[in-house]
Image (cartoon, rainbow, N blue to C red; front, side, top):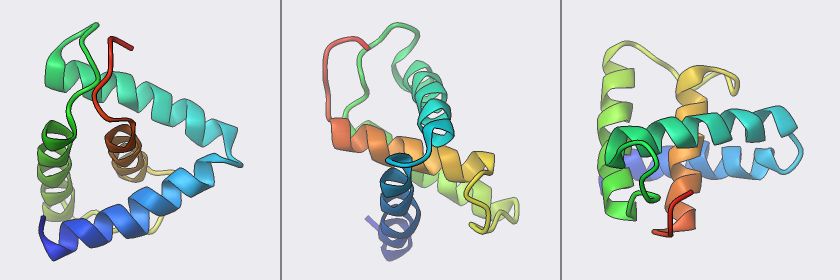
Length: 98
């Protein structure tokens, strides 16, 4: 894992997961993003993706976001929520269908 990706996970992912405890709207958004990410990686109705697949997805997603000029300044923007979602999913590990 690159240093930048590690910082992204720590500074956005972990902070966002902590924020979920007091923000029902963020929990709902993460739930919606989790279904979309799962469908992208393993297909509709599939299993929770393995952490390695999620990390690969997160790396590509972050690189694309930064190339588009995205800056992590708004905790409500789509990219922030997607990063929090992937970090949350990595914490869940592989499991039966969701």
